[in-house]
Length: 273
Ligand code: KIV
Image (cartoon, rainbow, N blue to C red; front, side, top):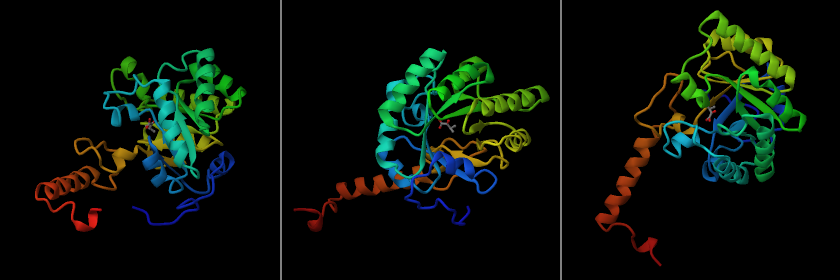
């Protein structure tokens, strides 16, 4: 785990879109997800980007995938994060089915931005949906396409599949990335792409890439907060580094509390009025 300070560590100054883009080639972009005000307050300023990711449907909502998340859900969680995160650059996910057409994308994206004042939106798509990215950018919305392994496509793809393993797939990913850059995307999220392919994409683009499970060649890295804090003791994907054994630490604290109540050592006199 690195202890090297960077320019954002503990920052209270709001990170702008330009400052985020300017990190490319200079320093790695740091990013984490958050779904609520409590954790947003803790993470704010410690990382460049906080993503209100639709992964909240799984880790927070207990669903088996992200597809049932509604626009109202993401608005609720984004509002909570925006209330307490004032320094990091904030990106919200557009939920599955809320940007199927140009018109629905424009309607739902403007609703999400108006309700939350989040800085930018992330959408899982291929360049077949380039017109949607163009329409949002034309409307003045900062857009980060998410390519590679796209969890919202789980039903069509029958599982989570690492991408870029063959030449055709690598070429398609690179072409999509270049098309999104040309359309005005401010950055790209690369998920589950083999490292050489993600590195090649990153090197060909002027805009930054943020990777998850896509190797060290990306301009930045993101992890889902509950994964990196070890809140799932039954799940440990290869690409996650666990920085805290959160589940066992919290479980022990709750056990200690319950035991103190049972033994009547809590509350004591100092904890009473
Ligand atoms: O929803 C999410 O948390 C994401 C991550 C995989 C980056 O999109």
